[in-house]
Picture 1 (cartoon, helix red, strand yellow):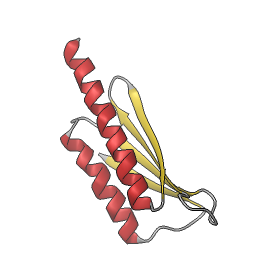
Picture 2 (cartoon, rainbow, N blue to C red; picture 1 turned 90 degrees about the vertical axis):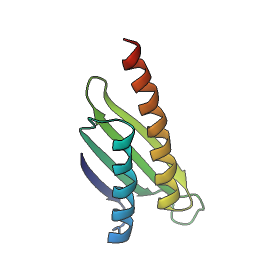
Picture 3 (cartoon, rainbow, N blue to C red; picture 1 turned 45 degrees about the vertical axis):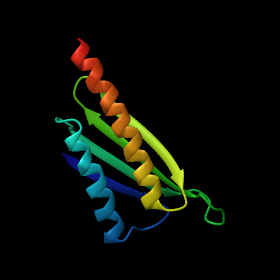
Picture 4 (cartoon, helix red, strand yellow; picture 1 turned 180 degrees about the vertical axis):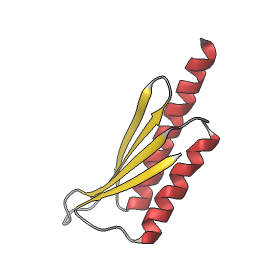
Amino acid sequence: MNIKVNTVHFTADQKLVDFVTKKVNKLDTFFEGIINAEVTLKVDRPETVNNKISEVKLSIPITDTLFAKKQADSFEEATDLAVEAIRRQLKKHKEKVREK
């Protein structure tokens, strides 16, 4: 799986990029055949709490894309929430494919 990490309004350090890559790579265990993943990390309003946004866009065969956007106090927490949402979507997709 090809993973691309984009940042908006800031530059991510290597530790954060590695963390995001590791989390997204784990999605391969739930669904084989993921083509690529695009993660966008943004700072909403720097002066507020809960201002870190993580968007995960996954390309899979047949249905094209799955998308999750989560907001939290840290990028790690937002990424965890987004990856969990994508995992649930993958699970539902897998069940639908099995039914056909």
